[in-house]
Image 1 (cartoon, rainbow, N blue to C red):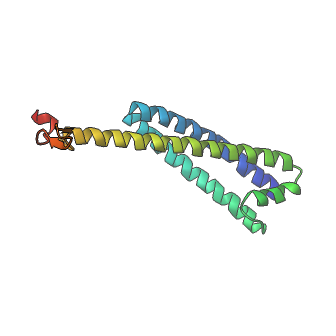
Image 2 (cartoon, one colour; image 1 turned 180 degrees about the vertical axis):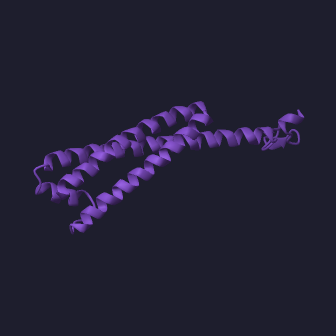
Image 3 (cartoon, rainbow, N blue to C red; image 1 turned 90 degrees about the vertical axis):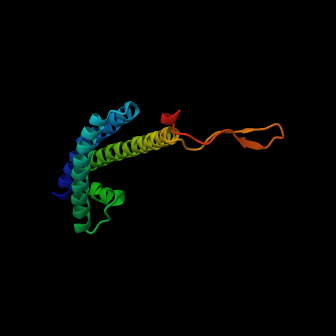
Length: 155
């Protein structure tokens, strides 16, 4: 009974995890294109999927701990070892783990995209606000400021 419930809980997470992966991949494209409307839609759906996946994970953990097992792969393996559905359970768990790893990698890539874009935006704002002025060398090799920094709008 517990083995079929655990198998079902694992299987119930595969489709939302695949959808999350697709959303993360779409997010990367939207980040490159700076499509804010699409990013807002993706964020809303991502949040609901993450909440759903967390709830399913808590149910799996609760089921395993109620059986006196650890709430990790070893706990699932212990249930699988005593189940006629053991092979299917471990295959589905591997599939889910692989999807989770891929989601994490894509999410980290998206995080790097965001950092790069923040850096670019900060540089653009600094230029527009008349930040660091360029300095040149004079005939003696020392730096000489040519002019006071001015905002681009004042040029």
